[in-house]
Amino acid sequence: ARVPVICVDGPTASGKGTLAAETANRLGYHYLDSGALYRITALAALRAGLALDTAHEPAIATLAATLPVRFHAGRVLLAGQDVTEAIRTEEAGMNASRVSALPAVRAALVDLQQSFRRLPGLVADGRDMGTVIFPDAPMKVFLTASAARRAERRHKQLISKGNPVTLDALRADLEARDARDSQRAVAPLKPAQDALLLDNSEQSVEDSVAQVLAWWQARQ
Ligand code: C5P
Image (cartoon, rainbow, N blue to C red; front, side, top):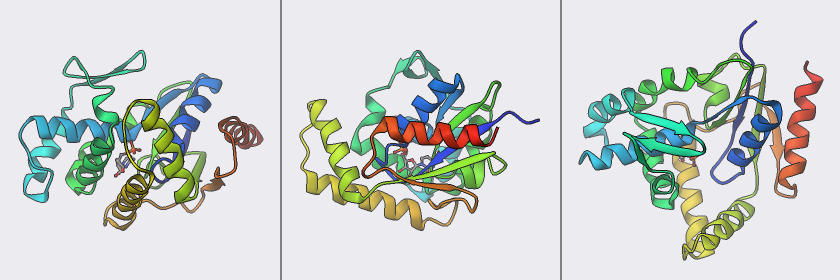
């Protein structure tokens, strides 16, 4: 049988990362943060002096296909340099959304994402894990939360890191990113046909994890 994969897709700041990482942890599975790959690609492109637009699509795709990236002990290394914090800013997220709309860049990252599928299993989070990267995954979750809730959570996170942003600016930012992610031609953000929908607006992380683990157990 194929190596099991649990896909967790959903909009910005829905809590996919936290849910997916904790689920992987509880099951002893590997974890793929696919958004990080787009964030790193955008950073690498900007550092190479490439504007994030269609004119530079082939060059950015080449960069993406040979990304010197390593995930180690919770840190993200780009060509040996620690970029863990640099890729987590709002700006880095917006830049990731720009490069992720370029089809050649998406294609260039397919093999790398699929290489994370190793025994005993994988939990993968992103926008198109269930629709494009792992269409045969035995379980797909589409995680949502209201825009207000998502903005609130992101706001708390950024403030606690000493990052001054207003709630309104943040919400506008989230909505712009979601609109771009949902409307792009290739691999738009949308639930797979066979996805289980989970709205965590009124749910703790622990409750969401418990729900996903219960669904997973019911399928074994
Ligand atoms: O999930 P995260 O916010 O880190 O993703 C950053 C951006 O990367 C998203 O806004 C989206 O445009 C893009 N992305 C994507 N496909 C994925 C994961 C992320 O297009 N599988």
